[in-house]
Image (cartoon, rainbow, N blue to C red; front, side, top):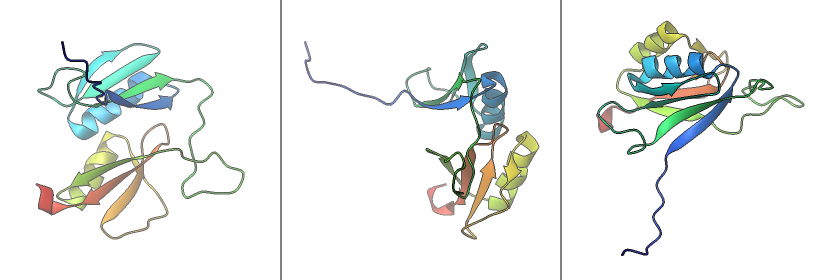
Length: 133
């Protein structure tokens, strides 16, 4: 019997008021599959993988959730984490994200990345990196 400790990332969990809405957004944005949805939880994962075999994004209902402010502002809800996605065509990726329900941040920090907000107000970045595709 193998007694070596094994740890594998299962998901990145995001608080929101409506897990169903946010799971549908990220499933559309990433062209991923929805593993499960109910009022309290939803999970999306990469197609062709078994749930849990590859890290997914888990959404948990928090009725007290307040979206973070980006960039940071004094006395405002601060972001604790954000997701970065690499893309091979930044403009097409931005338009796709908008079509899925995202909004572009008024503030940007790089010509090769776009800061966006998901429907619940979480910031995420689309970053041009053609070399990995």
